[in-house]
Image 1 (cartoon, rainbow, N blue to C red):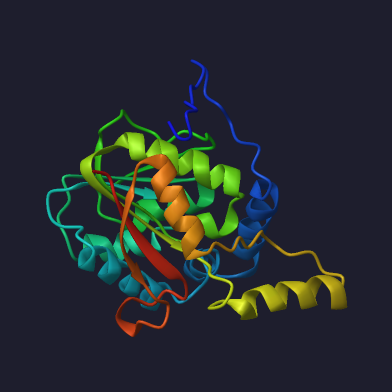
Image 2 (cartoon, rainbow, N blue to C red; image 1 turned 135 degrees about the horizontal axis):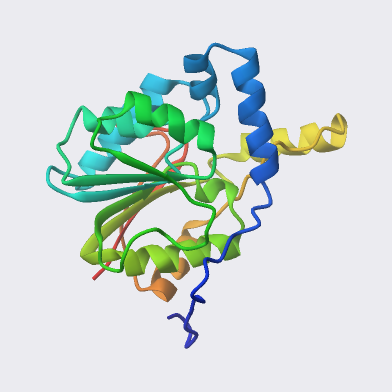
Length: 240
């Protein structure tokens, strides 16, 4: 509940008509046709498989992800982060969800055998309320509309245990101006459509989102922090 409004889902699954899904599906399949599979799966999630995967896993353990936790990787892609995380911690359980079947199929082949991967096109997070100790989402909210971000954040709050943590990355306009400028040049100078939405959020907006959904902001990690740099700002939220 936020601002006196409660979200109630019907018994049937609510399937999101993602604005980007068809373009992303085509993009992934084109990569698979054009490149060796390992390269295609890295490019599909932005490239630099080892560098970004290790930096993200380091950020997670730095922010409290540890052995024995129940973890959700929301927007797991082809398993770039999950593979590196599996080398660092022994989790009680791991669930990775994504919207692209080919990415999930690949993740199953490179991640620990006890990791579970699931296709999910719903605006609801899989699992019962109070299931997870830690939820993370890298390069997910960067490509969603603000209404989608709100719905997912609300549901993640419900799915976390008390004291649970939610870490996600986001784009700040002042720190990622080059991305916005490149999108504008591509669109207005060359008439090329942007391959996916790049959503920018300010820290004030993050603070409001956290307050309205019940979270507390505990820390930020700047994109310039080399030890944990994935090229985006990272925020850690905590459920009281």
